[in-house]
Each structure stands twice: as structure tokens, then as C-alpha cells.
Image 1: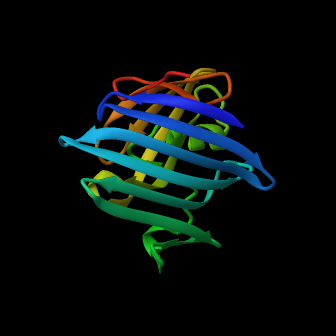
Image 2: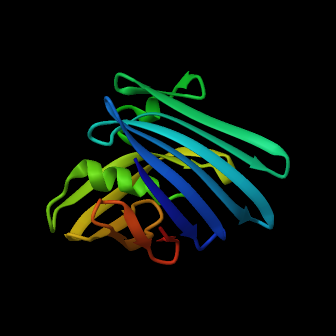
Length: 181
């Protein structure tokens, strides 16, 4: 088991995350507490992956101002069952991106196993639980060095250089997240 503590810089958040190795992959559980639009929120998520960090199942719950939101997904073959419905737009997707955590950037970083100067374009299920949005997103990862990846969101044009620790976990996502412990 690996325990991580991240500080979120945008939403003044703290995240306590546990990554457990299980028989067929990894089980990730986390709690994020922060502030969004002057409201305190608590987000809990559970992600199950296979041995290659491909997401198989997820559950995300959010409580903000007494209101609860829930998002869940389960991979069935190449399809995704999202909140109880098959969503054809996500067919074949391997990863998710939960907006409030750098952990979901770790999934493709570890799963793609890129070599230095190698680039991979991927499609992810983007989950913005604070704004109640689930949509497909195209992202590009380029391995710049052993510890650094260039990230690009293809729709928005946002880019960042993400630093990882020796275990491949996001250590620094400039302006967004810092690994504290």
C-alpha cells in the first residue's frame, strides 16, 4: 500500500489517497476536502484498475452545501456503463480524469509506459464533479525525462509539465497540485 497526501492550489484542497495492490491490479481510495466558489466540499472516490493501470470501475461522490452528487462507471468489454447507462462516446477508453486530483494523471503516466521523447494521444472520461459534468476529453502525454511528462489538453490547449516521484506518482503539477507526503 502507498499513501499519498497532495495539496491542491486552485481549490485550496487537501487529498489523502491510498493505492493498494490487489490480485488483478490496483484499488485506489481517496478523500479530497477543499473550497470551490466559496463552498466547502468533500469528494470521495474509488478507482479499480487492472495491472496496466487501465480503469475498470470508479465511484465518485461529492458533498457540497448539504447536496450530494454521485458519479460511477463500470467497464463492460469496450463499453462504459456510466450512472447505469451505456455511453457510446466512451467506447474503448482506458482512463478517467477527475478534475480535483492529480492521481488520475498518474494512471496514463504509469499505464502508457512511454520512453523519453515518446508521445501518446489518449481519450479519457473527464469527470468534473464540482460542476456535475462528465464528457470525453483528448489528452496528450509526452515523456520528457525520467521524472517529467508534458501534458496537453487538446480541447482547451492547456499544457503543463508534470513531475513524478520514483514510483511514478505525480509529485508536482505546477500551479495545481503538490505532493506533501
